[in-house]
Structure formats: structure tokens, C-alpha cells
Length: 51
Image (cartoon, rainbow, N blue to C red; front, side):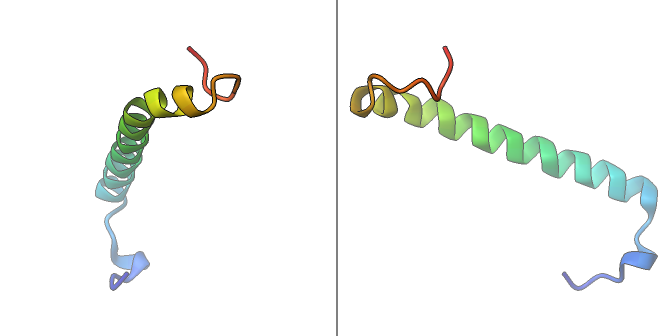
């Protein structure tokens, strides 16, 4: 990080943080969707993932 936190505009920082959180959640969801079938095959008795 090369920005001085005191000089970051709070209105855009909040928006940027929300965008980052949403993008991270989307990435995680896509990995769960992609990997779930393999997980079900290799761990059929697992109750970690809900359906």
C-alpha cells in the first residue's frame, strides 16, 4: 500500500471497500460452485457444504 490513509477521501474509500468485499465474495462463491462437485465425489459423507 503506497497511499497515505489520512489523505484518502472517505466517501470513495467506503465505496471502494464495498466493491472489494463484493468482488471477494463473488470470487469465493465461484470457487465453491466450481469445486463442489469434486468435493462431493471425494467426500460423500461430509456435512460441511449445505445444499
